[in-house]
Image (tube, rainbow over all chains, first blue to last red; front, side, top):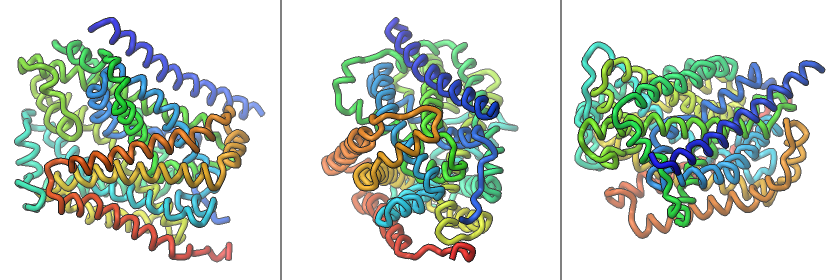
Length: 37
Length: 491
């Protein structure tokens, strides 16, 4: 596979799974804060 | 206010919404659209479309349900009485889609049953002739396929069982049906990647053709894929969000659902193309000759590839369980959206509304189990997606963006969400999303005038396409004219 295909896969993977992970992290943090209250 | 069902937890809501969004299209549509529109380069417009149209519209649909605490027609009616019809239109389109979606799931039950107890061997003849009994043309109805009929009955029985107790049971079911296909697909992917030719297949999926980015069609396809994939315009997300307590997050839930859906589609592409690469190498043909989307991929190409693998029955069973679990939560979410609309309007019980809907769905889907059913399914699917859903998304944006006012909803969203959304959301709802959907709509009309869809006769396109759309609009208008039943405690 050409390098451009690998790079594209990695970049899109980072955006999609990184974005998902970041949003889940915020949701978990918010829920913990609410439970703490 | 009448008692409203509630999700057991935020996780249950997110899983149900993700399950609704992730469906068969993630597996058999996204990888093929990417392949045909620039390969890896397509992922750029896809992510842009996700963030500029998918997420904003999802936030809009969630916020309507959460703010008004009603299903789609009820929420739109609460915003402005003139908008209620858009909601019924959405439920009409969703209902029509559920009729044939259940039939496709019925085929999956049949193939799953075939996976056990006999050597797995498949080809186009088994699917089109033996299972479906496809006739020579759309005008020749032929006979009802008994395996398809039994599969259809099993599917509706499952949907009835899941939905009849409301969202509490849905919340439990999705804890299995959402992660299970991801786990099974991971196994299939690992198996696929260890096969010869897999990397050649992935090359076709991922190698970017950046020239495609200058083609308007690539961007159009990206917006269309995002819109169809996220369950937008069905009336599902508003109904699901109406079961959230009023102070629940909206913006972050929309981002989580959208990223999960897109992430699954991206991942499914690896599983599909690694196996296609193996099949091409095993048959000694170029990869492009085995690339097919839609039911042909799931019921002809993939089974053919699996029949060449060691432990074919196990792999095949895993694949069809993946299809079933992918499809079932999308199917029952459509039904739940419609049932919520009926309950809000007439205040009938969940169990009764579900029973009526499932009986209607079973009999309504019979046409798709006949010898001409495959053709009718293709026509109705095209019109529901390209004209039904797109028009609803467009009208929702116009109704809320230009008449009700995005500022009121944005203030509510920011009050309850994990993070604030800015004025960008107003701009997307008022301008970007309706322009993208309007552009898609005009392109579809122009294309259909230039080149009528498929090789079907004109009368079939009128009956199965425009005719079905017209019936949905008329029924939506008639239901809108009926006054809602006010429960005794409210009156």
